[in-house]
Amino acid sequence: MIKLRKPKILIVIVTCCLLFADSAFAVSIYWQAPSEVGVGQGFSAALLLDPLGKEINAIEGRVVIPRELEVISVNSGNSLVSLWIEKPNPSGSGEIVFSGVMPGGYLGELGPFWEGYHRGEIFKVMFKPVATGQVEILTKDFSALLNDGLGTKTNLNLKSHLLVIKSEIQAPLENISEDREAPEKFSVEIIKNENLFENQWALVFSAQDKGSGINHYEVRETSPYLWQRFFQSRWQVTEDGPYLLKDQNLNSLIKVKAIDNLGNEKESIIQAQNTIFWYQDQSRWVIMISVILSVFFLRKALFGWFLKCNKV
Image 1 (tube, rainbow, N blue to C red):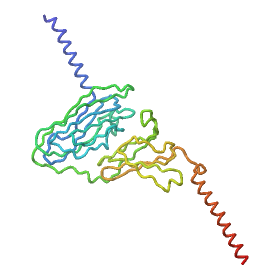
Image 2: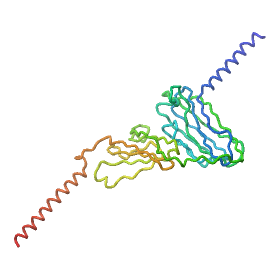
Image 3: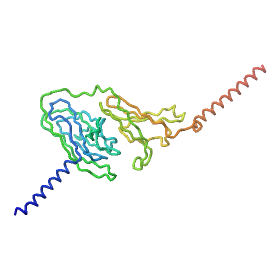
Image 4: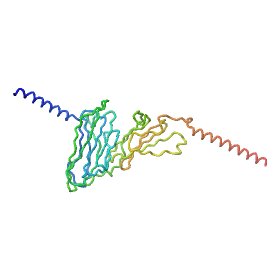
């Protein structure tokens, strides 16, 4: 009987080890936040991702907020996500839904010294407790895709966050009003993709702001044609990239401004990709011909006036 049980026990042990190993090396998503706060005491909670050696290409999920917590703001200024498909924003539904991609893959954050890759921040939420109780910030419907060219789903180790809210107020609400720094310098790229805007030219950009977070972007295309400069184009407001270019000939100077939640801004400029020479600008020819004709008729009028004066 003992000989028959040993293989069964061995199988159970091996199975448990495999399950444990699969869970231990799964991509980990969890919260960094206090475990105890008071009513009215503002606090921030960062949603973190630890790839644990796996290269992640895309991530999506849904965060369920308990009614005892009020969302003050969502800051993605320091996010590992470089291109948002659906940016995390507070809503009245008690949820924060998001999805984004990391072109080229994401292995983690590198510190000042080579110690391997570390966890990165997906986004940060500023909360204000409005009622007492033991609550849970839930992470649901999360999925992450590997940067393997196939978009393979990887196993996730999801952890919700338990929080105890007490009646006493221990500290004032965290304040971001002292953020006077502009967003960090960012790059802007012109791309064309058959899956984006019907294969038309578009801008891709993503700025970071560690203070109050990016609020929106503004884009201006300045035409090289002289007559159009008299009617300066307005700044076009967009929440995020990609942004469809109006000038599909790429003749315009492009400016992109990143503006944070307190009005600080940083500007990036892309020179015209296709240069327009002065003789290609029809408006310049119109102006030149108009000037020549004006001079001709003015001389003719002056000459006629001169002859008339001499006859007198």
